[in-house]
Length: 307
Ligand code: NAD
Image (cartoon, rainbow, N blue to C red; front, side, top):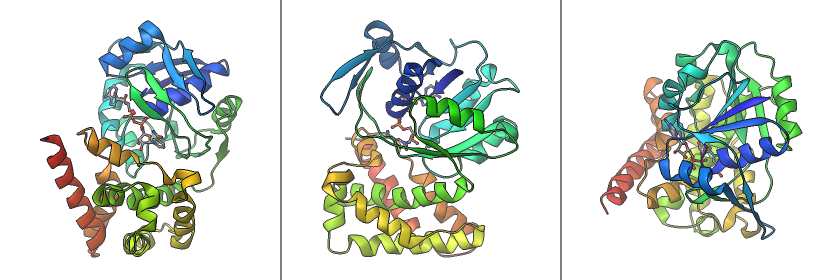
């Protein structure tokens, strides 16, 4: 399959390598000049968790440079960057191109619907992880999985088998929206609270009222989910959190929002707690915890950006 990865950052590069190794024709699209230059000159350097370091040669170029027709475009920008990416790659999207978004957060499907027909859209959630440590250099740990579903009438099965040929561990979901909300619930707890408490995931989990704070956020999300017709299983999210805080799982890690804040970047907060708070305003339902967390993260973004 001819596949473009739009957003060839930490996760896009990992997925791109796996797809290329399985024999797909993969091209990366990215706008970060130093990253493109490093990959084009020396290849993409991948540090694996078995201690090995490997190089992969994958063409990566800017949206302006890319040309041709693709069967599949996998969207892996940060969520606030998705709209701009879709504008920039308009010229390579034909009516036969399918677009799969794997970025975290809510609102991605609405953004895609502004650019392409609903029948071209697939959405997913992924548990694969990757860290971008330098331009052209990523560190990958563990394995992962993807749940995806076509949002309109597209046949998702050929895409599932193409991705599974690359070992991406994909299952066809019957309710991807619920899976997206579930993951957004987890991220709406771990991402902002580790930033605000300056803690890694295990430290947050051990904090006296860490789990109470999680429930404050999740109970609001459940309430807004009921009004949107989406079941949010707070107990299931709390069980996942209890697993994630263990040091042998994700406990020793700092979530991506923590890393974005430290790098002086915009975070995905408006597509997590901020999105839920906005839905609360639309339904006239108070969402004090999610609204406050959103405002505090924006304040933190401002503080870190000026350092
Ligand atoms: P990242 O910032 O490393 O990668 C995004 C890339 O997109 C960057 O290299 C950036 O230069 C590029 N980009 C953005 N807008 C662009 C534009 N208009 N034109 C060209 N290039 C553009 O982010 P990431 O960590 O790979 O995460 C991507 C998404 O996947 C996020 O929503 C994140 O929450 C989600 N996610 C990440 C991980 C992970 O482990 N990294 C795990 C699960 C989900």
